[in-house]
Structure formats: structure tokens, C-alpha cells
Length: 447
Image: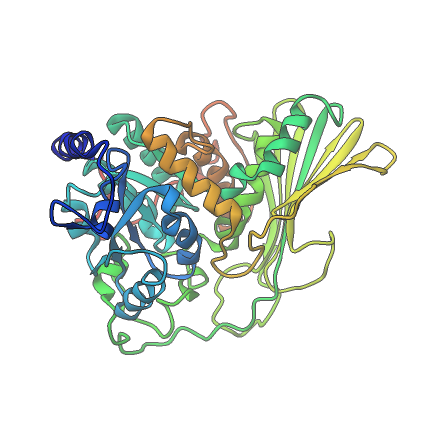
């Protein structure tokens, strides 16, 4: 929030205090006046990236008690902007500006915070530009495309001292907060392992073939920091996740981030000492999916602690009784926790405690949203106002994100490797070649 605007709205708020709202005040409509009440705390926000994650922002932004105003809806695809405008028209009073180029949004000094929900390759570069422009950032996972960006986004946050929340919403789930605290307080004895998993039945993906740029798409801006390529069929609409490594971080970056973050939270660990991966493409061998669709990864930490990841993108086998979740094992019991709640068992496997309420947060549905996302966004808003602390600050979130990068690197080089558990650096020279990425000249992120 700019100092001039902050001073201005404080003066208006003081001048308006004690005035009874009627049909108009000093020629102002009741609707207009209502937008000034509490304006010293109002936040002006923008959303960059209006795809499937958009639904997660409707409730927290539309909720009047959030006291925010949506100024911009930004996306490189015209129909995405128009769709988003239609959705928000039903829940907010003002009419956001529809913008193609996020740089124009960042030029507006009235914007206090921006949601970054673009394809993965834009997350860190856009977040850095936003912080340099004085904006706070709600940064969806994966917060980085590679380990170099992972370091860079934290350095940038420290330099510009902005509020940056990682969008791993389970950190704001009351049931998860409750049971993780119980684990830390010794409810299952000494925790020693966490098993994380994800199950989905993603179907066949079209082979990426050269095609005209879809109508309404700014292909140049979509690519941004990525090396330039001719457009290929269906790239822009979600399948960029599976077409090589230009834009996405595969299923591990896409979904394992959430469960690995819960596992780290439960075990109270930081960087691992080693990673070993078995992964391959097991389904639809001739389709356009160019990376693994099945992965088993094992991370070992100091103190003989272990986190395992079992990812099945295209096999619906119900191994653990849920589409996703985390199982934490301890010397005296275990805990199963996911977006729907938790169950705590004693060492004999008897249920001793379970959730009293059921969350409505989406599991493996594309985009999703629900009460956890709403709480996480509102935690972001209130931290900007100084009334709360972030549930997942970027410096903490990037450690969880690092685990997904380690797993992807191990898959790409075909072997596991050891890691410095203090710094997160990789000892293997071949693996370190994938620490960063190639950028389109002139688009490199800089702080």
C-alpha cells in the first residue's frame, strides 16, 4: 500500500467516523460509502493466472469481512480473463480491470498484493518482479521451477521485506494444525517416518504437434522466461505440465509439494541427507506425456528419519483408502492426515482420535478450493495487516519445494545422490547441472 494512499484513506476514515449511513452522504451513494468504511485496512489485490486455481480465491476475496478489493484479473488468454470476470461479477461489487500483461498491473501503486497462479515457470520470476514493485505475494506451489529460483525467491523476500505466503493451504487447516501439534507433543511417541501419497486417473495426453497459436493467447508472454519454442497443440491449457521441462515440474512439483510439506511439518525436519527415486512412464506409452507418471521416492534425514513419496498419476488403485494424504509413524502410534481431516491410532492400530468436522477442500480435482484455501488466503491478508503471522512463509515453504526438485533431478539423471542437510546443496556434479535452467535472454530473474 503506498504511503500517500494510506494517509489519504486514514484521513477519510477519520472524517467519516460517527456519520450515520443513509441513502447518501455528502452526495455519495450508500454503496460507495460502504467501500470507505474500514478503508484504512482495505487491501487492493490482483490475480495473475486465471486457470483452474481461480476457484480458490472466490470465497476469500468475495467475503466482505476480508475487506479487500479486486482491482485486476490478469491472464495471457483472453477467454480466461472473460471467464474470471463473469465469476467474480457474482460476488464483488466493483468491476476489475481485465489485463493481459502483468507488468501493467505491477505499475499500479494502488495494488497491495498479487496472487501468482500462473504456470510453474513464471512463479518465481513474477513473484520477484512483484516484490521489487512493492507488492506482497501469495505464491502458489510450486514456488519455483528449479533450485536456483528456490534460493532466489527467498533472497528477494528478505531484501524487500514483503509478505510472501506459499500456497500450500493445508498449513491453515485447523485439524491438521491440531494433530501436528499433538505429534510434536508426543502423542505417537517418537516419529520416525512419514509416507506421502497421491493417486489419480489422468488419461491419455495428446502428442504435442506444431499448431497455430490459439485465438486470444499471448504466446510470447506465456513463454516469458522459458526459451522460445513454436507453439504446439494444447500446450497452454494444463498439458504444459507434461510436455518436457520447459514450463512444468511434473507431478511431483504439481502435487507432492503439498504432502511433503505436511510430512516435513510433522517430522520437524529441514533438508534431507539423500534422495533415491524409482520412476517411469507406465501408462499410455505412445501418448504425449514426456516424463514419469509413476514415482517412488525416499528421502533420508538426520536422526534416521525418513519421508517416502508414492505418486501414481494414472493408476486409480486405492492403496491407502484416500486419493492423497500423509501417514506419520511413531514409536507409540501413527496418524493419517489429509485434506478431509485426520485419524490417530495407538501402537496396536486402534483408533483413539479423529476429526470432529470434515473439510470441503478439494482432493485431486483440478484447481480445487475450499475452506483450507480460504483460511490460508485470509491468513495472508491478516499478516499484511499485521494481525497474524504467516502459516507458511516462503523461507519455510521452499525447503519443502526443494524435495520435489531433488526427486525430479534424481529421475532426470537416473540415480540418487547425497545432499548437504545444512545448506540443501547437492554433492553430485551431474545433479548440480540441473540446479538451474536455461532462460530466454533478457528474461532472467534478478533481484
